[in-house]
Image (cartoon, rainbow, N blue to C red):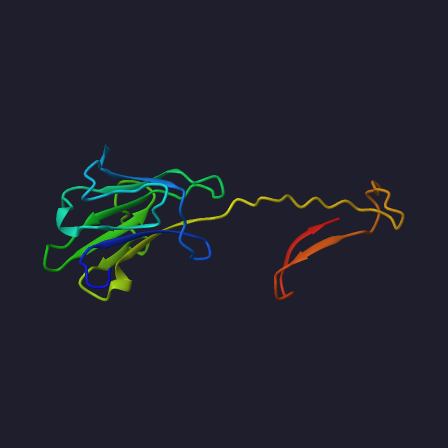
Length: 169
């Protein structure tokens, strides 16, 4: 998309890798966008280029994940609005509700006439843990310890060992 003008939307996981197998819909106001020239997404998609010139400057658009694919928690809706003209191309986007936040710190401005890396909206998902960690206190013979006064403690630390994340007594 380096030489193509537009708004690049990318679906990624919390590590930055592209995600396929999810369903995302684009709405203009309350109406689902069905014009496949403006928006097309299927389970094989991980990114899409939205043609800026086709966006209505009076409308607020919403990207909604309707199916997170089972491995992820659904992402929050992303709202965006065309705020520039077809020469000074600009998009403002935010997360939350259709009303643009009054707090400017909650709005991201994308200048689409700049380097292509600056015109990407990323919808990020957090993976759903597939494994539960169950901790049981046992004695040396493997019998479960149920005595609450026992001094056995399980501690979970950050990767570098500097921060205690959780402790079970």
